[in-house]
Length: 534
Image (cartoon, rainbow, N blue to C red; front, side, top):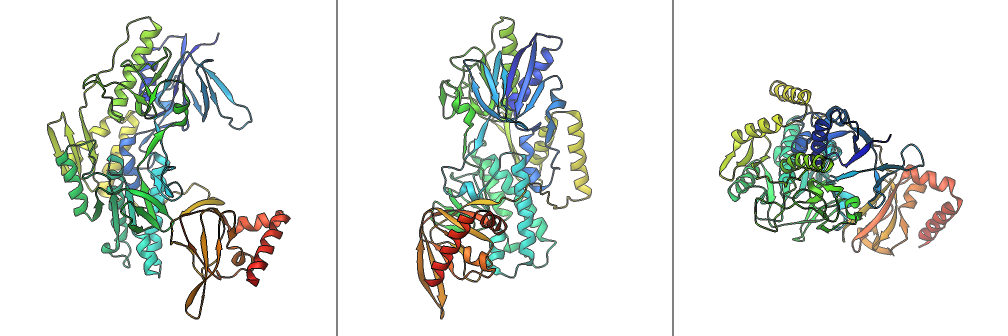
């Protein structure tokens, strides 16, 4: 006979700790089984993710196998296509086949968190790097190492300046911790390159408030964190927002353009599309629940973690539990108890928890922390407590041993800044440029064909020391083909008349396209001939 299923969507703190407690209490109960659906087969210990960027913990030291944490659960490493709450099924996208998979549930736990969404800010999607998961941390680390390597041997002073300029948007925990680790990494690497001076490095943190970690820590600690980072060379811009990015850098809401090849944004977060599609009451993209974490309007759907709006009974009415790991771990435990109580027709327990405190790492053996609203720590003591507390909460004894060994060895032998590249390069890229920016300059090597999706550009040609506008191109038109077809340098400069979105096709892929599509080849050659005559 089919077992009844408790299906958990998501492998974050809330979902995994709920599954661990359910597994413990359902031991020997053959009537129910736990099903986990997650995109990866591992759990990420989020508080230590920034240390992956700096290399102070190993890449795999922050992750634990889901199968080792919940060995009795069924695990599906799949994307979710949709959830049908009437039929009580979760439909998974096809994998290695053309067929979807349906999972029936008796209880559904929604623990999908939120996602990074740059769609509301022009250019951030194309050119800003998010910092949300392990892949993001690894991408940032690889990129930063590459910029330092490139800056060490470039002969172009302007390019060197752009390569050694780093912009991070968002001064909450994530932004502050990642900028601290990035700053340590770049300055540490620069010592190995005689032609890179420490004062050539520019690390900037852009924050919309007047102090760092304003939602998480008290005013005094937030101010201390800002001053400490500034003392270590980080340029902190308060009351300023990162509003756009391009291949040339970042644009702030003050209209200032920061030339940079590295833009990282830790904001904004948006609702997970699966959560948004569920037919239950929501607010700010979160599922509204009662204090037992039952989703409003349902008896068999529960929500936990970042995607849940859970009333905070320790505070005044209208307040909700914050989206932190500290809360999610305890929410998971209470949620598991309530599912078990529902199975046994027992009374449900309301979630009550008072924040014990907060800790934030600032790199270079320093951190800030606040406990019980009155005890404050900072500097080396804060750093020691940060490491001790978070290390003690790492799931799995083996993981604790590995991380402790890494930290001990780092005191004897420093970590080497090596890259781990695993992603194949894209054939077609979506790029955004701001008004007045050059897409390429006359004399540059031809590497891409560009198709204008939105906006207008000017085609400029330099003759006798003067730059003349010879054409204007708009939506649907392409440029860059002459250099690719004739294997020569760019014969003109392309400058944006207004903000522009383009598709960039690599030279190799452009060659494949025109070799296989005769109509496209004819169109390109016809356009090239017209432009030659013009």
